[in-house]
Length: 69
Image 1 (tube, rainbow, N blue to C red):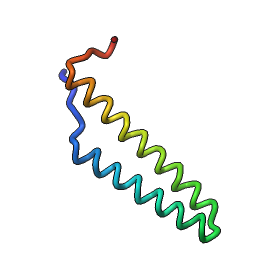
Image 2 (image 1 turned 90 degrees about the horizontal axis):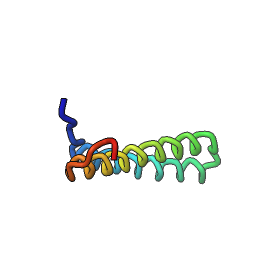
Image 3 (image 1 turned 135 degrees about the vertical axis):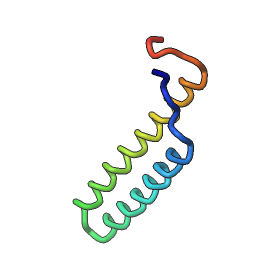
Image 4 (image 1 turned 30 degrees about the horizontal axis):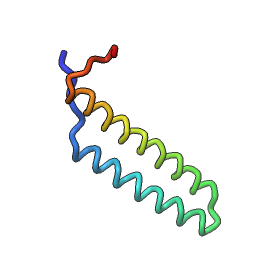
């Protein structure tokens, strides 16, 4: 079965979502709600990881590279 690229709009939406979570985390830290801030920082980092993985995966599939190399 052929591998499918992740659509660029999906990656863009994940990127904007992670940026908004980072801004919301900053707002929570300034309001003194450290617990909520940490949760949103972790969610932001997770989403940024997904975006980076998607870009790397799309580039690998676009170049015709194999999984083993």
